[in-house]
Length: 215
Image (tube, rainbow, N blue to C red; front, side):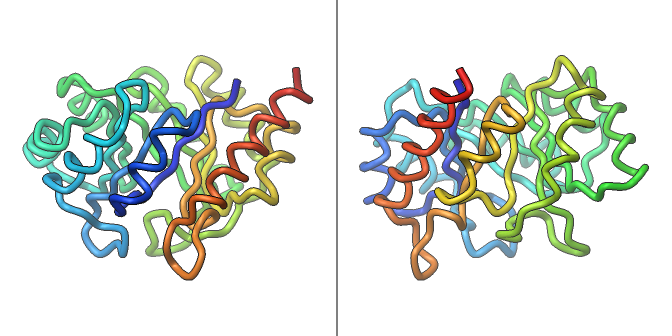
């Protein structure tokens, strides 16, 4: 079954509503400059509405190990998503926090992407996102999905999480064609810049239908 992550949660109402849905991860953004940025204290409050089965993911961009540890402890995170230029050594160090480590990789569709193999032994998940110069994710755009096959071959033992422009309208096709371990949605379930519960439900329904078709 494809796991679902709803990222960028920053509303008490949405956090309370997510409790009723079969999702696996909720993402809180701690990256400076993001419009979805919240404080660790508020993230802990939002997490208090969620059942333990839903894992709390913190999204970071080039944070120091000290900052990572402090926010992990304060917000009660179980996964850190490293969205910047973090090296394999930084990922290894982040593992000492006790949290699982996901490394985000902006897909370029070039020979450059083969450098991802350096992370094979130091991450617990690889999050594929859309490359845009100077932007650390959150573009709301898809990347060429055929690239997923390369990453699945290069890192056969690392779960692949797909982000970048996913929505209720396209997530089913992604799952049926490429079977990622998880999908990550943010802007694709927003209406007028705010997360919408009906859109989230539709997204989850599309994931479930695609899983059933794929067997």
